[in-house]
Length: 195
Ligand SMILES: C[S@@+](CC[C@H](N)C(=O)[O-])C[C@H]1O[C@@H](n2cnc3c(N)ncnc32)[C@H](O)[C@@H]1O
Image (cartoon, rainbow, N blue to C red):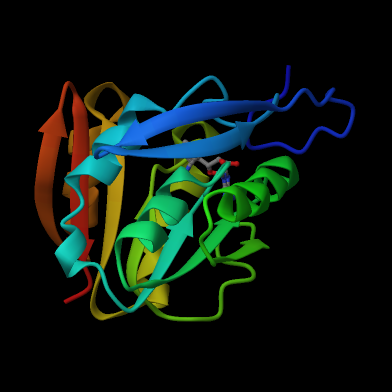
């Protein structure tokens, strides 16, 4: 069994449609084998989405590691922001495109390994980051976000305390202004601003 962040062309496709209520609105998402949290909205992702101060979200937003798309699609549907969404998982990208259509939002979805295809600078980079890729890539994703954030732009992430949330917060303090936005059953929602 490969990881959800690896492309596995031999993996059988068996799409299913899930219905998810976020902040009193229903969304439909197609999911499939080989993508993150295919059975339903991940609790960490939900905690992140529900902790966002939506009236603050504006300008250009990057949903990093979009998976089948819940974060970017929700943000586009509930703010004035332009939303880009990237992932390395081709199947997830295909699903995210279908899900944007199903939920009637217009977003820009493309392949990127870390920031390899990301050229813009953003007001917000928002992510449930791939902890399982290991520390080297994880910290590259977190720290390289600075190059893609405008001044005063923020990286907003969710990390479980069992997956090193406190350590990650401490490390981010070396080059961001860091604030804990929320804590929900062990999930830390961390905002790191490029001051
Ligand atoms: C924890 S999942 C979150 C997925 C989705 N945002 C959600 O909340 O349901 C992390 C995502 O990061 C993607 N990812 C892993 N390594 C990556 C990389 N090097 N560059 C871009 N995306 C990556 C994975 O394929 C996966 O979809």
